[in-house]
Length: 249
Image (cartoon, rainbow, N blue to C red; front, side, top):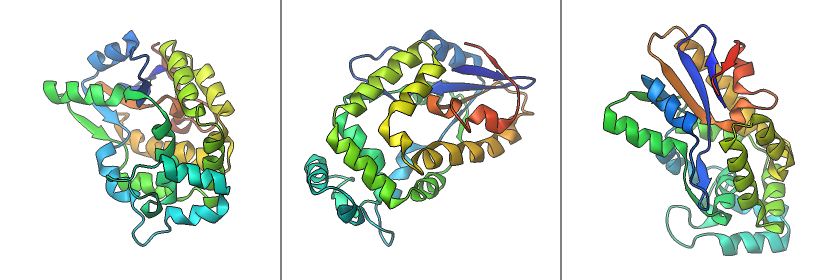
């Protein structure tokens, strides 16, 4: 969950972006990693993705309607906020509906990155991002409509699954158990659909590895903070970097 890239001043930390509201614990190695670092690298700035959620001239979420079960579409629309940046559902890009929908069924509090970012701002610790919001949008745009519709069908059929999975992931993360996290992901229906894991994890891991290669010669101690799922399973970030790593924890 916390690795040193051998022969460099770069470490990788597997994070959780959100915690279940019932368990806000953070393991001690997260604070240790932050204190070790002179500089931080995060995935992307969440606030900047908001303008990309709306479809504009792109295919919109209404195109999912004929691909989903009638009952599932009705449930999804009833679940969706009626005002604010995410409303109405039909104006969003399909991948935005896929990413947002599980969070509407979860009770959560902020995870690792917002806490670290506040500390970094307070202490003037430098930070940067691995990707832009446009990079994220381009990757997620590659998910087939059929896969998005199937995932939302499954989600509406078991609306308790996102919270259960989050709580299991958090428990495994607290133990630093990457194998358990990978197993939980394998059991999650969404990650077994063609194109979803590839877009969310694999494509981005390869792009990040190319960008991180530029940091491997830096002298300042640099902590790269990414979601824990990026550190396990086929095509994980350490494998894409093709460098030996040593577990710090």
